[in-house]
Image 1 (cartoon, rainbow, N blue to C red):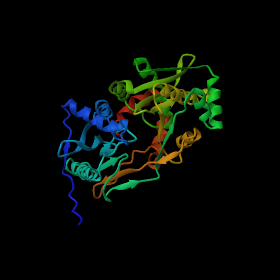
Image 2 (cartoon, helix red, strand yellow):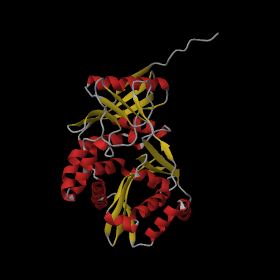
Image 3 (cartoon, rainbow, N blue to C red):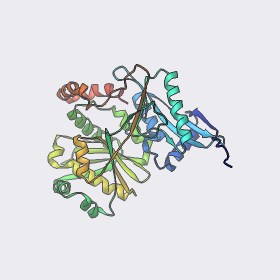
Image 4 (cartoon, rainbow, N blue to C red):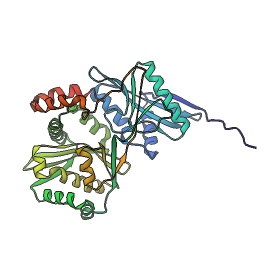
Length: 357
């Protein structure tokens, strides 16, 4: 005789932000979960809040014994330009519900929408993770992620790069380039100058410098900056996160001279070697929109794209936010932004970018 199934009793609550033990529990849960990312960690969520002024919270599902079954980190984004949204995780390419049971996933799926309705957020954006019902718009085939294993040594790493891209790295290695890794004020300053110029050339506003500073401070040994210089002048730089044996070069870019010097190619190759020496086994090149130059660049390095799935739910009569700079609606704004003097763009950019989430 089959016994009737009785679902386990779970409880959903909001994390107590004043209890440091809660942060430790979240970090342990994220670290032990196969799908846990740096963007699920309190270090990320609180850094975004501190630097950009958005509130934050975690929704948590626990069983009757008080054991964590699921978490959902949320940035509460308020922007006059881009609207209001609950985002998991804010300013990240990952996040979403992290769960060990379907039942807990369902409970947090319901809970986050109830939270949105209670506090008048017209949309919820989950950048990864499962959702448990069909009321959510699933975005497939828009973005892809790129992750591969690192090689055993520097030479093997170079040989693992496809021939055409390997030739670019070799050309860069012959140039007068210096590589340094650190996380002090000078590293942050050099990185910000390079990154700000890079995104300006792409036509997008730069994030506040405080965001980079806050992330470096919060992640400690789990973040650093690798900078490539030519004759003492920084030309390429990347801020990377380290999580469970994987390096993620998250905010990176190069100046106008970087292309001629192949500095970006040297930067990523140097980061692969640096990460391996730190004990990393995998290199996560992050996400790129399918069909873009960044997508092609990562494929040229031999990375195989893995489709990513995002989920969005909006209130009746509302439209989902569009904060993608590649969107046709922003084509004119991107063009005009590229024409702004860099000094002016760097003053105005953080004011705008704080609302992107």
